[in-house]
Image (cartoon, rainbow, N blue to C red):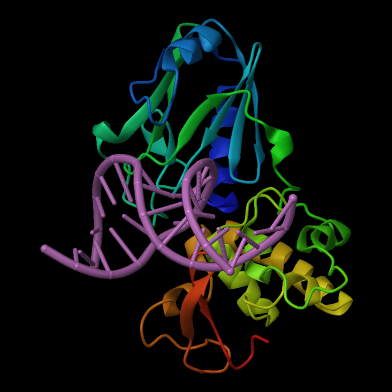
Length: 265
DNA sequence: CCGGATGTTCACCT
DNA sequence: GAGGTGAACATCCG
């Protein structure tokens, strides 16, 4: 379920344990939390300091090392058994205890809280000191010049080059945009997902930037990546909410992509 | 039973 | 080296 919009909610949730001391760590799934023993040893006894986010990566700083959580497609963060996205979920509700792949008990003044990762599909990852520098600028705060840089410049002799959507999804260049946000942004900006990214005019880059930022604000307010205007039409027979054209479905950058052939150019 | 899924990574092409 | 494609990961859902 998580793209940047969801992970930001997780960050707010995780920030609640700032000042609490880690009393115990459970990492029973070696796929999701490789080297769980080292994780426990590093974190136990440390105090949580604060929570940050870069793209889809959640970072929990402690008095020792930093805990990094990636949520994959179906991961959800729980605090005391409750999710930050309860009632807004598109993915299965985190009701099943079998889906808890990582759990941390924190204490302060005789009270205890539990921060946990629920992830049915087990594509999430829990690691120590993740490489934050490998991620591009955060999409929620990206500036126009940074977006232009992320799209890349046309090199002499290049006729085509990578697709616009592929660049938006490339976490090394721009962090936080996932498949649903990408389609929503491109639909709003009236840009064809398969267009060469380096072929955008300066005016188109500014338009894309404006819609990227506005989309993230809107989806955050409305409740998640799946609350976009295009979302309801991502189905056979779906029509463009703007002009009523039949939407197209295809594969761009290896992901299922929906777009309006009439107004996305 | 089958197809698809909000992500990342890797092998293998061109 | 750069991009694209497809598979893999493992599980649930419609």
